[in-house]
Length: 128
Image (cartoon, rainbow, N blue to C red; front, side, top):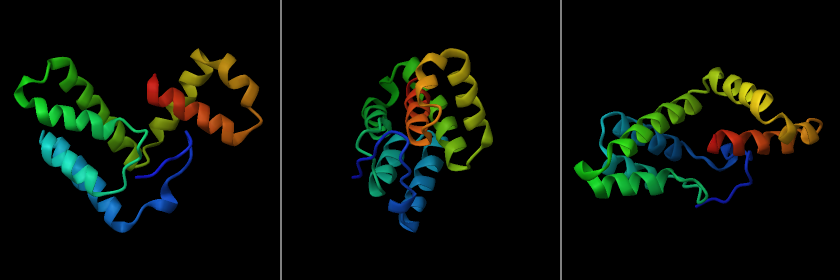
């Protein structure tokens, strides 16, 4: 388990095995195998504030009884995690657009503080 501030990089904590676990978890999710995805996710570094392991655990336990909205959220979450893992530049573009268009009053006070701006952007991206 790792505890991080919002926006803090976890790169220095990740091992090659952690990267492998994350990739195997993504692959299992893409196949719709929530239980295996949860097991793979838990075998690597887990950020305790993250919701991924909780959501996967719930999906795995519900199985076919999971409501449609939960499966839809899972599909979106998978796409976002894939974009983050592959460092897709669209993630940063979307966050910047949302911050300027919808949260400017929140980011204006921290525009000169890269760490605080990154924390704010991460918090918005995680919940918006």
